[in-house]
Image 1 (cartoon, helix red, strand yellow):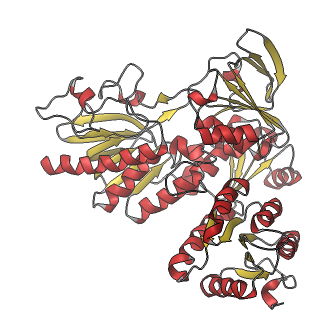
Image 2 (cartoon, one colour):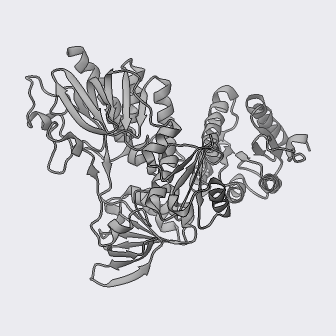
Image 3 (tube, helix red, strand yellow):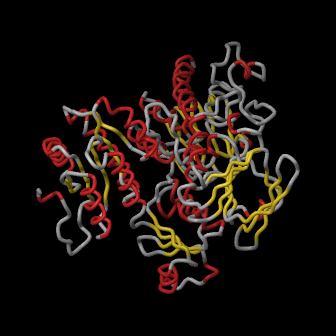
Length: 562
């Protein structure tokens, strides 16, 4: 067997390159795979080979046992004894973070598509892949970049120590995760390392949560904005005036940033929390065009953010728009940090937020076991616990499937009598196939109880009025969509629910010019709207991306006519 077929002797220091493990029972194909991978990625990764699924599992186990990183698993589908799909199922249990690629012949396409669901396959490649520069390298490079991004988040960086059921600690963890800041969370109650670090740092219990930065500084009870400033995440605008200011960094805002910058507009995007918006918290988006294996909301946000910045757009995060001022042809956005942005045009893509429930106990326990949105940072903490998901739309379904990977039991509370009224069929099928998800239609939570530390139980009521009290460790709410438009006041016309009127609706709501407003133009000329915050919009990621790019085309028309 070649020298690169199995791990070598341990290195004295952790300087070993992450591994790519390739397996194929045909020696010629395996040699070709290893040759092509080493040619492009050999300086960054070790390429290890195996002739069967069983042998490859042994290689992966040895790597993980010795503390080495496994970045990518590549397996041929047609192998005797253990197929590529069967191997990847088992390998995923050993190295869950590794990216997974299946090598298939054209006749095996159906098996590859099935593997997307069964194995959470990241990609499948049809053999042969000549030339590798076009058919192999772009795919592998993209997967490795995604893996590297995730690996970087889990190593080094800032360390946050606190109590799990603490709202300030949760907010800091969520900020780090959603802004993809490398860092570690340490639970003071569960991690001995956390307690040792507190002793060394001289931080008392009442100083939690605490952030330990890489430069040695210690921040006790920092706000999200204070931590963002110290980490350099809260950037400042580079100039005083822009062609386009985008308010909101969800799919619509990111698409507009990409297209605006690529088409020569000086563009800045303002996002109050993190790029990706509400969609950025989604664990898996499986019906987005061009990604047959699906992608997470954070991955979509990362890709779009990198793309926008590469094309020249500025992104200001942890900044919120607090008012819009219109003076002649000028448009001024005032920011929560005290600054302001002047622009020729504004695109409002501020999106929506989940409605706060008035259920007794929910306000007091928010951040202490009750969360609005997916809060993916909490998923691993819910291992073998009882989780409640409130909501019946796609976002709730995606969260339920995701949490089912860790939780002992996931209970979905749906007010309607069927998931089919608001959820895509692919999600309904996935939920039905998971034994630890219990869907309760026509059921709602009428009370939540706990103590100063965290949520303990909830009272549920079904369609017949019967009530039960059930133990609950964590609850995630995905109910309703409240538009983030209060900051606009009376400047821009909105409907009775707060969504922004555009096009013909804006014309009937105080439009001041003789010409008709553009399709996505609001009641204020030069101020456009895109995405979920627009009245009559379709609440889907793809439609938001389409509106964001379409808005840039309309903005060009507006500027040309001005």
